[in-house]
Length: 163
Image (cartoon, rainbow, N blue to C red; front, top):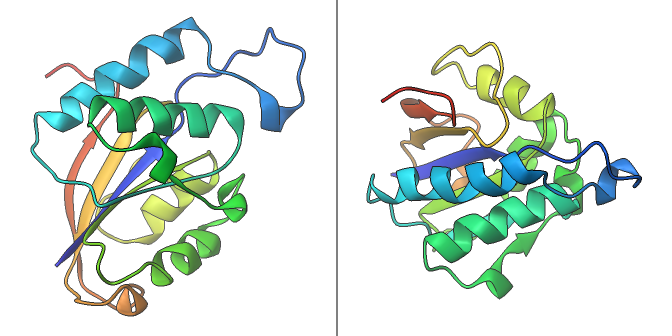
């Protein structure tokens, strides 16, 4: 069994004059990311690989999660194709993961991340808010079988969710 944690980047700062790729996190994003990483830590899910879009806001979110979860920030795998990715791109990135990896945390952007989550057929969500985590398992030993493997919803968490 393998697990995937889809994480939408934390809230970005639209007041900064930068192109979309280089937009940093705003103050709320800087607060939400460690909070959500801590909530994830309480679920005791060991993460073997962090995979992120290289866009500044996604990578910063991944680094905050990695630091909170005591994962080496320098080991984050950057995938340029995850920047504003369509659902098909998520399938492709996941299918190419090393089979030694059992759990991946994948950091990306809307609208693609919400569309991908909904394409899995395990749960229907209207939107993945910033810094939300959508988790599911797949019944497979190899990532190459991801597309056809049975998937099971684990949880959906986001900063404003009351627990």
